[in-house]
Amino acid sequence: MPTLAAIDGGTYYHNRTLNEAPFARYFDERIYVRDLPFARLEDFDAVFVPCRLNAHLIAPLAPQLIAFWRGGGTLVAMGETFQDGWLPDVRMTAVETNFWWWLEEGADLGVRLADREHDLFRYIDQGAATWHLHGWFTLTENQTSLIETREGRCLLFEDRESHAPGRLIATTLDPCYHHGSHFMPATTRFLSGFLSWLKGHSPGGGECLADASDNRVDTREARKM
Amino acid sequence: MGRFLFLTNTPSKPPGFLSALRDHRFDVAQQYALDRAELPRYDAVLLTMHSDQRHLAEQSNRLDAYLNSGGAIIFNGHVAHPFLPELTPYVPAGQRGLESLRIHREAGHPLFAGLTDDHLTFQRGVAGFYSRGMNPPPAGALVLNSLGPERWPVDWLLERPGGGQLLVHAGNDLFSFLVSADPDGLSNVRRFFDYFSGGADADARRH
Image 1 (tube, one colour):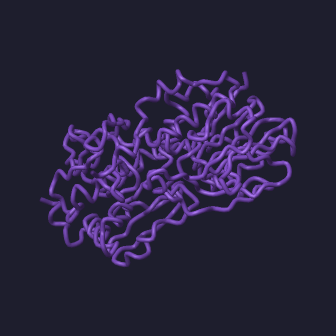
Image 2 (spheres, chains in turn blue, brown; image 1 turned 30 degrees about the vertical axis):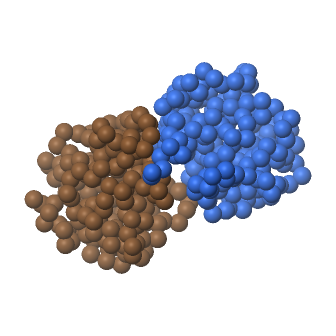
Image 3 (tube, each protein chain N blue to C red; image 1 turned 180 degrees about the vertical axis):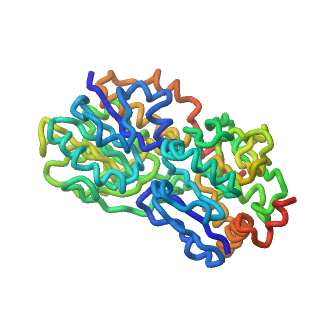
């Protein structure tokens, strides 16, 4: 089973995502971001950079993360880490987030699975990737879109080519922040599937989601009558 | 005029009111500048929901001494790593529909003057954004706003016996709610920071 280390930025949502049930058990090690220069990333198969880790902090540490990827590791960079500022060949366009798209009956945010045959989608479905958008990537030929908008703009890609067997996975989706804030149940489902996939668990995640039952704030039930 | 230190931990632009509110001076800095900030010059230190609380815990002694010298700390977010003796970890509330997400004004306090339960409860008609749990208050804290039928204390203010004030909001940054609840966008935040700068409402806090 692949070993997974996470960078911990010390925020409450990093703490809930990385250190508390139900997802703590997916992480073999948590490295406080300010201790990263002293960490041996090569001891792990994958390194997880959680949502909203301050890009100002990551930028000077990027050579270490990129060296890990080039050395054969799987580098995972989650949403709102502004990857275009610290990863090579990542081009990102920010969008103004519409937090209210779902107020209209039958509304569709437009998130689509780009390649339904990909192994990741044995673990997560379209609904688990749908909450809101922060931006999209313009891809290079080595980057394969896995999740995108209905217009074909990439929200999550995988690069297995540039530094094979190293792998880069980057997304503009920010599930750690929302799960960590006890808000938006889709984000908990996303992390359950995504982390199970990274760790090579079998698909399902039912046990994990049962543990997360306190996280089920459904804003659709929270509207003024 | 008050002087405040706004410590951010994102690369994003700070909220617009910091520059628009010309009655007060806000120094904006990345959080790690706290280590060398001259805290006594500030009426209050503002900590956002994105704070690195492990770092704040490392700076606990400095923050504690700043409060003891009469300073104020305004904390937003969920306590994960208690960085002051009065703080204990966040507890999420159970979610059982709209009433469990309703915010109630508790104390008639100048910090929230003019704001109603609905101002704090609803954003575009949807509840649940302001707070969904509590950072349990210490003995002696004044509960300002509460959540749900069990009236969980989501906002509280502690006047420390030895001096200093600690305001704790268990949710996304409070200031955005103060701005959005306000027709001109600045009256609520002006009143809020007047309070901490010993402005027009300062008498109320001295009881």
